[in-house]
Image (tube, rainbow, N blue to C red):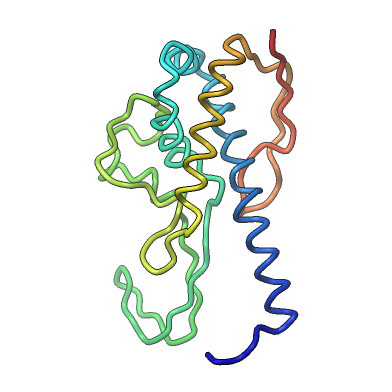
Length: 180
């Protein structure tokens, strides 16, 4: 817009980048390990074939994305799903629910690293709001799941998982594990 960014805008941008670039990845790794270890067969499949790490990444992002919801504002009057929205009206988009749509994903409530997804999940949102960091996030997650499977094939959960509180970010606050 031809003007310098203000200090408060810069601070908001830095906070967003920290959350978007760190918190989401950490939570996705925790969510993935939670579901991989909850169904040991899934973990053993990854250990047997670490090249499946990219498929694990996509299934984790579909099944339990670290960002559960996002908010949008209508820029003009629009009808969405039979509901009339006015200009400046807020809408909450439940990304995690969309990723479990049975019309899109067969057996949507089953975590399956062998899943052949018919459509891209919405963990990174979509359209003009599509996450610019998605290639880096996918790379980090794929490398993390592969490294964990290769380096710690006997990893196990040693206590109850405690999930962080809140509605936007989802991931473990505490997840005790042991390697041998």
